[in-house]
Image (cartoon, rainbow, N blue to C red; front, side):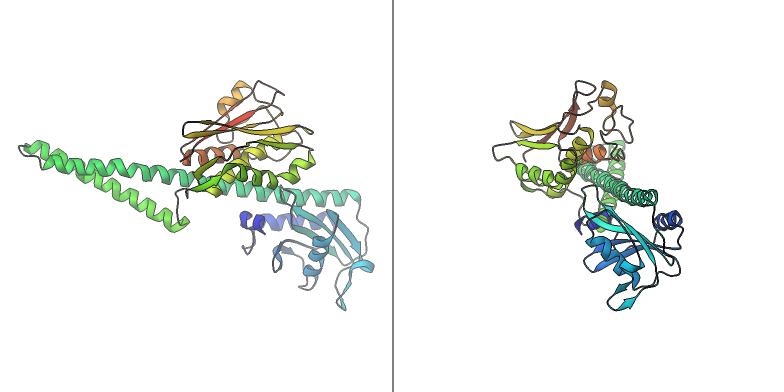
Length: 374
């Protein structure tokens, strides 16, 4: 449920792109009826529905079959599926594939059903499963775009907020200049113009910030005391399913309590992006090591992987939007070019620094995140 809320998919209007996925699934099996649904706490939220035989009684039953099945793809004919709760449904054939999150959670399913008995070929089932994967990738990419836009807005609003103080000072100082004893007429005129323009800029900045607060509640990071090791441990736990698929191990070498003041949600997203990146670009059976260093009022977290590595050109363009890097995920995982951009924005909001080092191809990469303790 938490993942579906992050995707912002529940209780949303129909979208043509999801209808197209359903239509394509129906065409693969040469049937007329298909649906895409997501499992919520009330049952299943139907996102796409096509076909004249898609009766309301059928979909809950079929989606429940997928939800409780052990396999990623399920298929069957009338003898197995048409009778439930003393009702006979209007289909003779059924197939469905689970839609999984990047972390391996079952989010929903894409299903098709027809009125004629048939046997699905392995090629058809494989294509249905690929459609489910494509839907998952669409959700991940859409979520990444939205998070990036919000992070960019938040960072911009923080900068605007920081601009208010010097502009207010300029306004006050110019007003004092205009009232100085002995000030000539030209000085007073210039000071009044400076005062008028600076007040106008402050008013404009306030309007932008008021709009931001109405839209998001608060654009500034919510500073609370955070135990970094606990936050990193939780993030690693969220990535366990993916890392286990590649037989990778996380090691957190932080033995002492490291506490900082920061925004829990934004920092967790920051480390999730970087650790998820490390999983994607590391080889199977490798270790991802997390360590730290303290210096004065700052802490530096290092995330070291044993993956594909980066060259000098990659390091220069690493945090640019949609930059093309020489490296690629080791198991062809989906990448959207936005994870590192979002991470950098969250670091900027916390007045920190982020950078990376690598000795070259296949020699791994280390990301460093320096954050103030307060």
